[in-house]
Amino acid sequence: MLYTQKEFDLIMELGRELKKMYETASRNEQVAMVHVFAIKNGETILKNKIKPVDIIKAADLQESYKTEISKGVKLSKFVTVREDIELP
Image 1 (tube, helix red, strand yellow):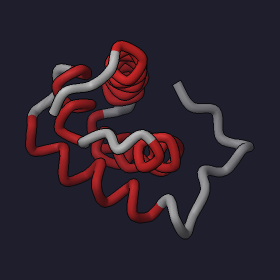
Image 2 (cartoon, rainbow, N blue to C red; image 1 turned 30 degrees about the vertical axis):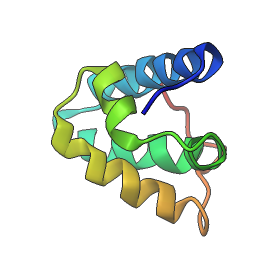
Image 3 (tube, rainbow, N blue to C red; image 1 turned 180 degrees about the vertical axis):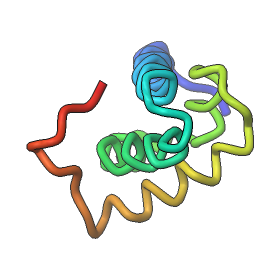
């Protein structure tokens, strides 16, 4: 899929955020952080019609994590990230 420069920049920004959240999480919480990332950014991802695989590529993570982003985006319609939790 072709993106505009603005969309591409947004994907890169989301990729950097995801990479930071993933890399700073403890090993047993890394997948949960992918879900948290997607819940936190679900509205943006949906509104801009961004494919999870493109965020994963921008974050330089294994492509299999696209499924975890999809799960988190779906959850974002029903849940929010607690504001009292400090995220990376």
